[in-house]
Length: 380
Image (cartoon, rainbow, N blue to C red; front, side, top):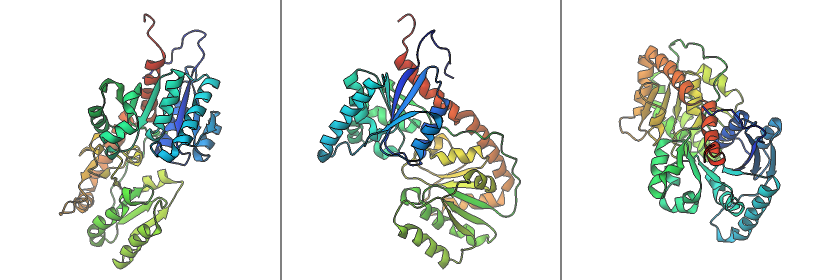
């Protein structure tokens, strides 16, 4: 854990945090948790963001200063004049607010944040939160990772990929996104004949809800008392969800497959479920997987690189959604036939999440990086 000791008469070091969008999402939630846990006797945050929304409301509630700056497409030649003005505006804010460190909370905002920090001769950090497809050599060059003083990635598999294209691997650190632990341990689950499998996340192609539905069909038709529940709004063309609903109707599963839309009571819904199923083509470790673990749920996830850092046979199952023998249906059948075993997996999932994936651990890791860049040893 990061020490909270401060030097006498030392004012908090001011940190500018850049974030592209203010809408509710994983990066924004992680940022809010980090700011809540930030040691304000040592660090004072100032946030720049492209638009008003969920994030700015949270910042107002926390008493954190923020301003609007439009972050565009960095490598689009037509956007060069706007990007140049953005860098200059960031430079001015850094000077006016007496900023001592710049933290780009997503790689999308990394280049302008880096150049503004470079112009004002202060250290810079870039936070990488997406998947392996964004770590090609061309994208590593595009987002200037080799020039940042530190690069934070959210999974070891991402660190291994990015360091292959950087001259100094020692600048890359793994700090996993954390989830706020519940106030109390989840109630011990009891096995029951009816099973509820839940998926939480915006409904669109990369989250794979259509694939989850398709691969779950044999299990659902074999067990008419079981349910598959999708929680989340739509982030794609309506046809994606319409096609799923047509498939449900064709298979006569309207009673068993539920689309609940966006909900504010996700923790309650997780508490009612028997397992979470998650699929992603881009995220090594979706936040909802850790949220489910904190709820005491076993988790069934796709074999996306990075998932094995969180999920194993001790807390759930990793399945290949493309396997001919339908590994997802096999895992669901095992859940039905060995319910006590899966209850035990959920208990182990909670213990692992509490030990490794809390917001406290995340913020402590980030603050230790701030400290390393801002506070030289006493004998230096």
